[in-house]
Length: 293
Image (cartoon, rainbow, N blue to C red):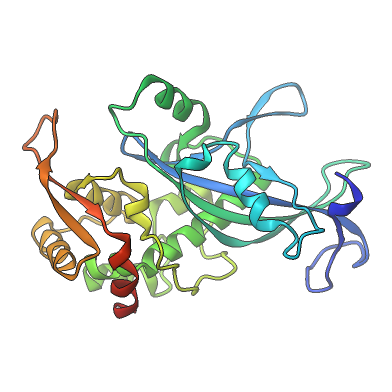
């Protein structure tokens, strides 16, 4: 890393041995993607210290000569190491984590963490897309052993992602109040995935209102999508079964308000009764989201 990307640690960052020590700044972006129905995280292979291939969170060095330190560009560059830029739906900030030096001669790192949503890979994806997903993405429910730094970054990103999901206007409209209360009122185990990642509640901005541009789960679903896919994603993420009738009723109320449009087409090639397909209307979303705050 060249000298342009080395900053002096600010005093508010609790770091030893002294506040003037130089450290490296990197931007890490955790990419969430639904791959064949499973919520997955992008962890490409990286070279380990003993010539082993390890799953690592993608990161990039910001250019400190830019006005904002180049963090936004670095976050996008990190995300594109696991998914093409055209597949990125949204990138949002998550927080900052300080990582100690790993050995003699190395510097400590300040990791600026973001989370991103990538377009899903469905069951009938082409061979190239399926291979790409299998090589880079892992189901959160099946994550194996992770080093402390990787787990800390994943936990920070997932907490911010979950906070944004629970603050999303679509989520608040669709989920019953007793589930929202249980998941947002300071209780632990908001999601079963928090246990897998070993985190919970350590996002830097847990109460930040979600960006209204892209509703969380519409970004994770194929376009168009069936109602069952949306319901099943909420159930898996929050570990909370939803009443199908009430969920459908709330969903159709949202359709009446405009941000989601019903299409005159249905699923094809499914082993169950074909469901109607729906699409997201971005032009009507901001108005709906602001009225639901």
